[in-house]
Image (cartoon, rainbow, N blue to C red):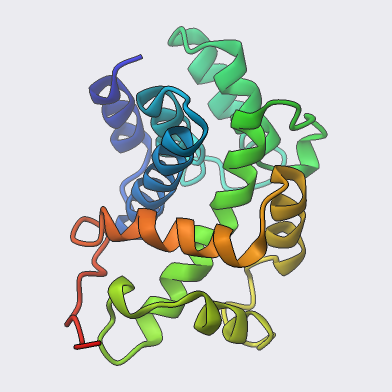
Length: 190
């Protein structure tokens, strides 16, 4: 699977800057976890990049990620990849029965939440975000209210990882694409 082909597919269906940045963030987190588990970083990265590529065109539960799955199938993407993408939306009923699918579910909502945490920091930098601050904001129901805390916790349970370590891994992954996702900010001295 080629990233360039996946990028073209993403940008054909997704025009919103925030959704493209989300795709890049989830791609980075998936690449990080692929490396952590000794899996194919490009393959896992493409899953992260494409997991919501159809959302802007089909933003409702009746269509997303179903329409995207149909498009990916026509484009020749493997079933394992498509099942992982289908499984990231709990309402599809597609089981997350592979490490790939579990990792995607575990990083998707959390990546968005961590980005929100970074954006409210004075520096607007991912480099200033720590697991402790993510956990603190997690308890504030009004903060990033649309992010499902239950899905984040479920993802952590399904992946079988420590919550703090998982948050740190996703933060570290996002640091690798900080410039692309607009979170380089002003790095504050430690």
